[in-house]
Image (tube, rainbow, N blue to C red; front, side, top):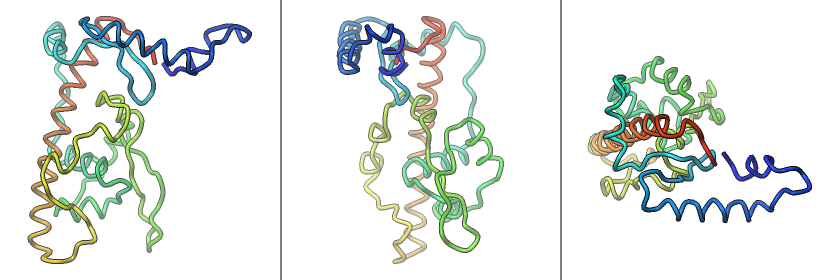
Length: 206
């Protein structure tokens, strides 16, 4: 839940200031720091969840396994997350292969990406960006919390770099694969945390 939603729980004449609510949430977050459950701030607000280091144990209580996504899907999502807004053509230029319509459809259906605009070139291709649902799923509150490209590999993925195209494409593909592995690890951790979250509370408190 967001602080605004929490504020609306109170009668109008008794509603505390938003800052007071946020301070209270941060105090609760601090109080839970050494407990197995934490109050986590994500893009859509605050929510209670099992701590990451315990989530893999709690997830064993569930027979259902987290969905496994193809490397092509993870690479596509990684490029959009790090290079947004990006067109389908941009993604194909970096990966060096075509992007299946099913991949784009799956990402849109999961509400991890959305069309943010259309590029002003012939055909006006869609420009894709990530969503709040993407941030929530990967257990982060902003894109700034994603590992930086420098942390993954000291490479420049600029689409505008036209020098040594074959070498640049090879480096871009290598970096994209590493980013995709990072996204996959975040995905597995998030799935475990989500299952643990459901077993503990079944509710979200932003």
